[in-house]
Image (cartoon, rainbow, N blue to C red; front, top):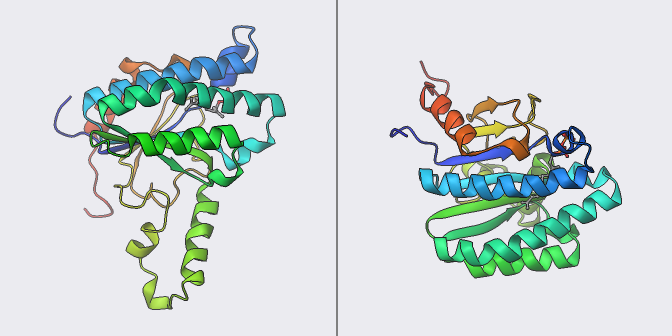
Length: 230
Ligand code: FPP
């Protein structure tokens, strides 16, 4: 891959359910296969030299899914963290979470907190998992923090607002990938993706492999980013 590499890739991992249904399997099997794709993509991004990766693992709207599916998703998350955190520690990958974790099931929340603590020294890459995340709710939390500090209008700047978002201190995503064929943002990183390059692929998330990541990176490398200038 050439020098034109995104610093930050964000991914909307869509298509687990359809992947499973296409095989006559329960949707939960699609999520399990999706967790394998998560492993592959983290490894691929690390090998490519991407410094920040953000994965939309559970949106604030996903609470509307059947209870069994929600339970399965959080139990997969715990299983994933149990296996991956020691490996991430070894590879210098720091875990970070975007979203309001106070509403997560206690076991999942504890696993996330432990994972963040154990990997906090990681300097190679930051893995952001968006859990109970919604961009509008994130902006509301940021606005509330200004109000609770008694900020005056002049205190509210693009920079100070960005510093109150869950991605504070990290660069904005350069590339947003959405799998599964839909072409929408689904309340994901709306502030941070102002200038992100968007890449939509019909590939269902559990089928997403390193070759698909490289195709997205090549597509990104060929784009000319002007940030509103000519
Ligand atoms: C969308 O597929 C995917 C999700 C709602 C959850 C993403 C979860 C994973 C990839 C697995 C677990 C994650 C980790 C970090 C271990 P969908 O169910 O909406 O698919 P559909 O559009 O085909 O129905």
